[in-house]
Length: 315
Length: 315
Image 1: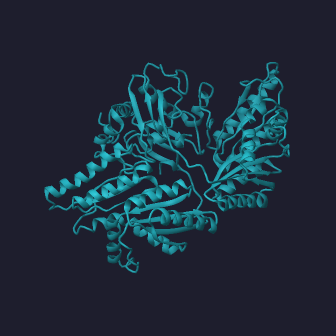
Image 2: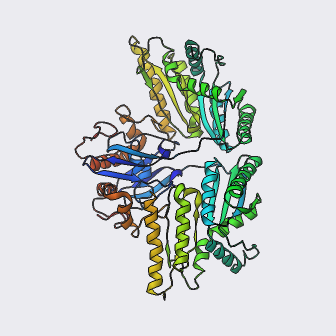
Image 3: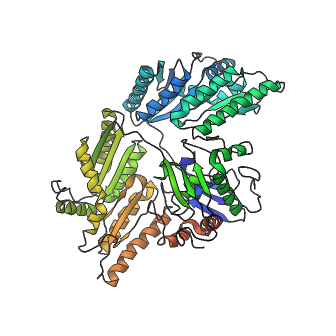
């Protein structure tokens, strides 16, 4: 989202109404206040107006699915496809456990239960956009070639049918709830939810070692995410009656994930934000200097600490 | 450039070494300090280290040139091509005066004087990148179709030959000096140089009315630029002996340009920065609130005003 925000208006703690950015696609007129405010979680001011980039609806769209024997290989395939210069529009990777959750959830929903269950293997969901049918076909066939020739991908299927595409993505968008449903009784907010993002070159290692931790520690935790960005989520549902050991194993999955993420030069949150919960990771991630700089800015913009206090930085 | 910077390290006025950003493609871990520092022109700290995105070298590249009868139409063609979803990799628009400067300069340079002089008409220089030859050919032919069918473009020529492409772009990169050379005796820094950037929907109106001002006021001022971004430069060479009237006409071109840019929701500088010269435009562009916010940040980060003082904000 961040890269689609051109400008905004915000109200600062001292009552100033500040215009940030312009409607132009680029600018070097002073400090980039738009990016500073975007993702500041209300701690620097209240955003009252946003100017976003508009993108044309693509003339041609194709969705594809590819199945892999191995999660590491599936993630490596994504990096390889991107390095070939294929402009993949969407790219989601599901581990085995996510595919199982996906199947089970679809079967339980009247509107989805005609969907053929998928093979329970690491799976890529892809989407290609283009100005012509041949452009998207070519992107799809190049992707198929890379995935199946070099990374053990198989059963590459694609469709340009809009209803089929929408159904596939809508099922993908229910994956959070499908993951919770793997543990009967888990409620909407009852999960430890991770959001690491690492350089693409480290993504395969991170997601596969996390999936291995989940398996070795005997917990439920589907891993899936935005593979093209190096970002994924591990959903670890919690039940009220869970044993101390089970809860401690969930935290071990998360702690290992954060450690590996920071070692890889990544971030503890790719898109969800810091809130209260991730403040403790900012200093390990940026060092004391980066956190000091955030505090200087917070203090200058909100000296009385009245804007969403306690989030991102503690004064 | 801004969108290619993932992270950086900087030294603040108080001596703090701050790490900003990560190596991941996206992050929402606290304030976006990387964007804040990028383009801050040394006024908030000194950047000592930068982490940039790497892009694969495209497998296939094609350069193209298209000539138009009318500058407004040429600029509108760019917006139309982008709206068709063609991922144009480079897109430069030259007005008649720029093409004349280009021809004259090439003839005067031994290494370029074999280049065929171009028709002195508004001209688009384009470049297409793709994973396959057919992908770039299709982008080029769709662009040709839009330019020639709807916007009066003609003489659309393309080449995939690397040497020809490099020659074309290297000649384009000399346009600043070619423009100066239109006024014999102008030296490298002796020009009023504009850098407006507006929404694509306003670009045709802005560049064509600026070129008209240049003509009507009888000054030399080739207009050319990054049409795909809505950004262009008007190069107005100044000579030591210029009359007061001539100089005042140059400033009129610039003043009109800035007024129209701000009316269009654009920015007074797309890529060159503020320095001393454009401080006066920041309040008209952002209003007092935006400038106040920049001052709060400057004061917090550099209370003694020792970091490149006098640029961007005046404390």
